[in-house]
Image (cartoon, rainbow, N blue to C red):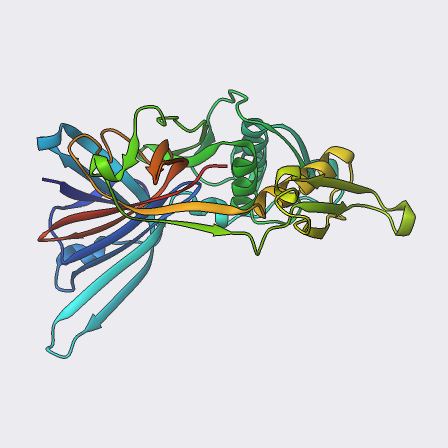
Length: 352
């Protein structure tokens, strides 16, 4: 049996309340994006007054019967309060908010276009940590986010080159992470100490397998989408006319599927000046527009294949359907927690 607990902290990081029962909690955690939660309480609960703007709400759960110790499922800023009275006179309170990564979404890359500060070249982890350090971490000067530190750099991930100016920091981090095979997050390590972390996904494809005959796959469906493919990319950089810098990238296997399957696209990348930047921009456009041959299915929890014990958010796993094997990523988990119990819906996506 899954047991949940919510721990509320004020905006100094001190715990001010603990909840073990409530009318309704809905939460979703995902890869490379902030968690989202909505919590409904009795409006007469005196603890309602303890919710502060950008206080911190942590969601913890355990399943002792399955050997799952207490684990923190989400850690989020309390952002949007709501109070109302229903037709029967009942009073209600709702708090909703976003995971700690939202501080990246509140930040821009404050660098002039074309400046050295707007350019990065290197492996993904290094690039990610440089961007965050310079615009939200200790290197951001007066713009530094309170309590935010940067984990030591282990230089993981593929290579990335690009120029970004005045862009949303979270969006840029998502682009870099997806392009270089990495994942990131902001972890709360002490009362008001936060740390930006980057890691390589855990590969469990050899040990975690979803299939109908294993009882952990329900309602499988395979969908192939070719109509939105772009498999021949031209990226245009600096300059004009014949002097404009360009880069090409293509997917020969996709083009060869039929005599007419070359699907061309031009992408304006005038803010990317160097050869590496243009090459990466073309490659990103190609990757973002490849054919989607996806297997969708309902993840069923079984004693031998449990979320939180055998696999976790962000893991690479295998799914088998109709004789074909698919590489999948555990991309999100949606929770609905009420006094009658907790239900988790796990969503997977294709791994490139």
